[in-house]
Length: 571
Image (tube, rainbow, N blue to C red; front, side, top):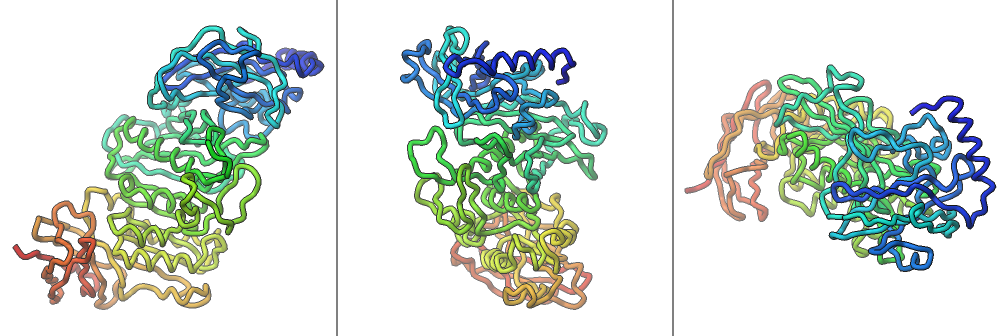
């Protein structure tokens, strides 16, 4: 929103008048409350504008009766520490200078409506039960000490708002057909497309959800942030492809810091804090960002009719951490994940206030579970023998962020669990390790995977690279694990599983362990014996492990040829 010179001059005059007001006379004005889709949007005009209001904060109160100065203490404090000019659009107001900039855009609270006016405040309360509620907004200092008055009709509502719990709903603020690259990314409305979630690396300044696609603003509930109503954005684009288009969901890992002077990023997981609504005083790590991702992914699948069996995730650096922490842990949602130079254990816990050392003990929201145990990728894999998303990842041996030994541990854990994965590396650092991922996308593109589509997993391939002893200088400086494999004609019945296997990189006969995964019908019982044959001349007997998995060891594959493996249960 742009302003002419006259309006700016008027704002400056207003600022001068407000700045000389006594602190105990401060009051917001023009309070309004409207309820939509399970949330009440409360707006007001700040108690002081411009730099005069920069040090003020705001607190939102709620009650089942009109709020006055006399009964304010009995009202529920829904949110405190709300920043000045808080109606600025998410992504454009993490810093004080941006909140004071009249050129920065403002939020809308209803699709198609005009943005809120300059120097507006905005807070959102999510209904937890049906109610008739009154609201008030009080000016405070940065330490939450009340400074202003409660004035009915000015800073406190005098009519109740009817509230009903309902699923929160994002607000579209841009349409894909009106944005940059619309010819390549606008939504066609086709149903049943695959969807890829892309997690960005750290930017340090927050930002918006990109210049393409349908863009949405949302206000979270208690599950999504340290206080109710924290805003966020995401976009959904449709990229033209062959043989079909795909949907691309781009969320944003950032939130407003309580000090109002920076964007806070969370490695796409969450942060160490005491939520404003919590009943405990000790800081804990809440997976708020993970909850945001899961909510917006599921909402987008329903909204755009994406194929729920073909959801994938990828990200680099902190986005790679998010792909590990969120994608790997939700096999009910993701068919495959592609972390790029992402750490798999000892991820620092971001602290909302203060500082938490990377190795300091911290507990999750339940007050008991160790945070570092929770985000330990190899530990998670070892404890989850069921089907996980296929994992294709890469790094450089000299990456100081995702260390070489932890990647070796992840390979060993996935191999021991007979999970589907491929790993490639080079001798680069954090900036160059991502180049090793080209072989992953070449051999294992997202279209190969669906949660309802069975496939063979591989382990102990005879042409795997040498990872060495954990020292980045030991072993093959460039290499990979499970690279080059392909499969076709996967079929199964209650009593037989079959697939044709090949490896493009094999220069001579090779061997590899093979385990069927994501089977729909072929489910031998633990301890059951089966027989197997392959067209390369091998045959034998194998026993189902305690988790119901059959692994055929050392299957022979001829170079440049396919080998058909058949596994049969006794009837």
